[in-house]
Image 1: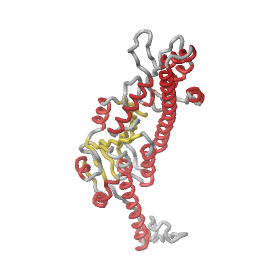
Image 2: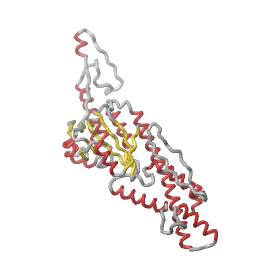
Image 3: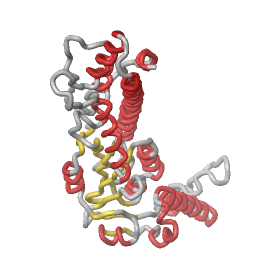
Image 4: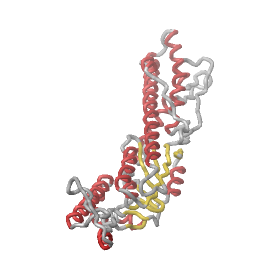
Length: 358
């Protein structure tokens, strides 16, 4: 069983500081003269999984900060955002697979150890095997029979800590997004919101969004994509503006006064219903308004899908109005009043390792 688990184990490529500076201190198991292949492989597995957030029990979770402040109206940094999210997902998934393999190996070691204990004192070969497993578990029998610090036990404790963290609404990896935007193009910000959704939908990942200044219109379209209960804002942050606006300038009448006759040709009656130089008609105005209404309805569906608790009163807040921090909390736009600095400091005090993606 142990050999099969080790035979299927492959050391995966580790990501180190690729544009992100996701670096952690390298921790290696202390090698001894009589170390076996089992221990060497286990050492490699422990080393490759250190970036998941625990290094010799120092941290209880990992927090990655993603800076999305100062976004413009067209989210010109979309390619950077897409690459950052893809990097994080690849990093998390690959290390998650390695952690799964590590857990399987640890389980196999524990099973073999139980079998050896149940069999008692066997032949010389069994005794040697027991010695190897005991060494892998960092069990000191010759110096102190009462001293046992097995890696299997450590793994169990970490798993218990993970369960406790889950109970406290903390996933294995937390991504804190520092967001600031007054909004912009619906299509651009809709795509940016979908990028955050990729992180939100990833198992064992929670997305916390912190707004210190403003997340309005398209900015709120992104902000509401936080994990449930994890949209935070500063006391005077501006939030909301769940609405759509469209503007156009038409110079048709001006041109006619100067003797210029504008000509507009269409293939399809609804193509460019209101243009810059063509005549404005009631039908064209109605068509544009219909497009605006449909976009607004899609915006409201998006907010309700991301924050189901807002469904009963979304019409009251989806008027295009904005709210300051405490008022936004009262109407359900956010979940907590706290600045990003305060929250990051809180996570540090709770024992999390903080990394920033740059």
